[in-house]
Structure formats: C-alpha cells, structure tokens
Length: 106
Image (cartoon, rainbow, N blue to C red):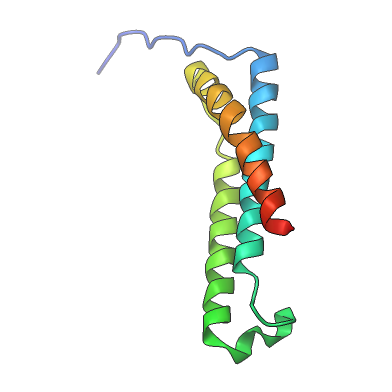
C-alpha cells in the first residue's frame, strides 16, 4: 500500500473559473450554432429530410456533433493550470468562433 500523502490540488480562483466558464459558453455555443447551420437540410423544411439520404446523413451527423459538444461542455477542468490554459485559448478562439458563426448565419 502507498502511504505517501497525495499532493494537494491547486484550486483556481473564483474569478478565473467564472471567466473561463463564460468563454467556454461563447466558444461551445458558437460551435453548436455553426454545426446546426451546416447540418441543416438543403431542402425547404426539416420534414422533407427523409426524401434525400444525404440530408438525413447530414442531420444525423450534426446531431451527433452537437451532442458531443454539449457533453464536453459539462466536463469541467479539475486543475488550476487547465483553467489558465482555457483562459488564453478562450480569449483567442471565442471571438473568432463567434465571428465565424455570425458570418455563417448571414
């Protein structure tokens, strides 16, 4: 048995966790919006998706990607250095993803 004490995990400050959560919401929200827009059927309505196999496959893949993104959004980081990494990554990627989502929805 290992009786050595385990090192304490460094806890991220509350302001850092809140800011990272906001950036993650913007980033994942933009990715989900992009996925929904790109996986929507080429036909006029959602009910005509079963008429074309490619639309059905596109819709199924889009649903799977959105589900995967939602699952990963709720997997919160456990270490403080991961929050710092997400802060730097989010400051760059969140505005870019949001701008791209706005461009695609136009």
